[in-house]
Amino acid sequence: MTSAKRAGRLVVVSNRVALPRQTATGGLASALQAALQEHGGLWFGWSGKVAAQTGAEVHHIADGNVDYATIDLSREDHDDFYTGFANGALWPMLHYRPDLVDYQRSHLDGYLKVNELFAEELSKLIGRDDTIWVHDYHLIPLGTMLRKCGVKNRIGFFLHTPLPAAGLLIALPNHRELLETLSSYDLIGVHTARDLRALEDYFLHEAGAVMRLGGRMRMPGGRLFRAAAFPISIDTPAIAEAARAAESNEEIDQLRRSLQGRSLIIGVDRLDYSKGLPQRFEAFARLLERAPELHRKITFLQIAPPSRGTVQEYRQIRRDLERSAGHINGKYATPDWAPIRYINKSFPHRLLSGYYRTARVGLVTPLRDGMNLVAKEYVACQNPDNPGVLVLSRFAGAAMELTDALLVNPADTEEVADALQQALTMRLSERRERWHAMMDVIEKNDITAWRNTYLHALTR
Ligand code: GDG
Image (tube, rainbow, N blue to C red; front, side, top):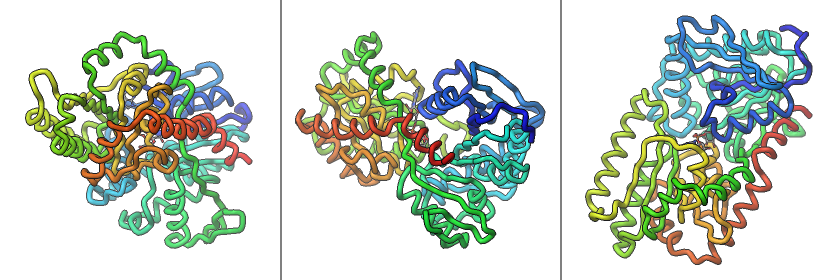
């Protein structure tokens, strides 16, 4: 470790890095970017490129007071670390889907090896007073690997996915080898109290840790660490402003005109099995089946940009949804009305915010979700004089805060159909009351508050 680097920077580490002037960076990326600009810092991660050798060279880009450092992955390391272990085993496990876990020891070995290489390269770039903030399930063991390289700095970790109960986590082979490495961090952040309970339960009852006064956990070897819930949020004022501005956007107007006075229901999700899309389509079909009076009066727009398209489960869900949308439209459409508009591509944020504002109902029904930023974005984008209604899964972290949404069990198609009907017929006074309560939550806890609360807890 070199010590001549500038003192007191923030060092963010994540699998993917949002390089300057890249589009579609998303809510998290811009939050971290703002934190880095404020403190001055370094963002380290994978370049997104596959090359002949992992980490053969570190690519540097400087932008203002922020440095970006990325490394390439070899094909084999990419397949083991990213596709194999992170997305083939950890993602389904963390989303309560042990049935989809494809565990292979060679994938775990590749995952550990890439984390080790990350640590080796990163440790050369760290100054003595830097604060390190590691993100997400791709990099669970990075803290331990950094400690092995002699890094003594404050290191925090934030998990963006849910964390299932210990009883489920132990189904992952070699879970202790992996999860105990979390104790090398000084602070572990999760989204909700439920995730925190799961983490504490795992450490206290599986990993032999004890809870000390003041809420720190102590590992059998003596290492002390803390864990707490920090619900992530969005840039509420900026998103609300973008939605206001979108009112005069020609493309938003086109959507509005195409609806011909019909109420719009909107869903926006990465195409992922955790988002509950097949069940959502089924619930919408159930609504059409039992409420013929709504035919030709509603339109459901589902935007589902493809994600991680190479993995088998994703190809399958794509096929299932195309079939389901085709089936529903085939059954209920009329020459001038199609009940579902299903779009498999992404849109710029400025359009999304206008779409959200146009929609009478935001339909957000993941089977499991760490937080779900779409739910918060939908609320932020509403017109205060005539807000829409959020229908939200109880199993999204956002449901812990947005308690004035219509909360549903996404697997219960009857309940979701009920909620849709209630949302579509809700009086303005109730819509406004619910919206105000939710807006209040995301105005108080916006992305700036999230990042400051976390960094304050890490560095105090
Ligand atoms: C993970 C966790 C947690 C979506 N479609 C388009 C687009 N998006 C943007 C949304 C939103 C973001 O992507 C999605 O965030 P979510 O939170 O809803 O879901 P994940 O991607 O699964 O995120 C999740 C999050 O991390 C943060 O911790 O909440 O639980 O799974 O910002 O607006 N953006 C653009 N075009 C699209 O078509 N530009």
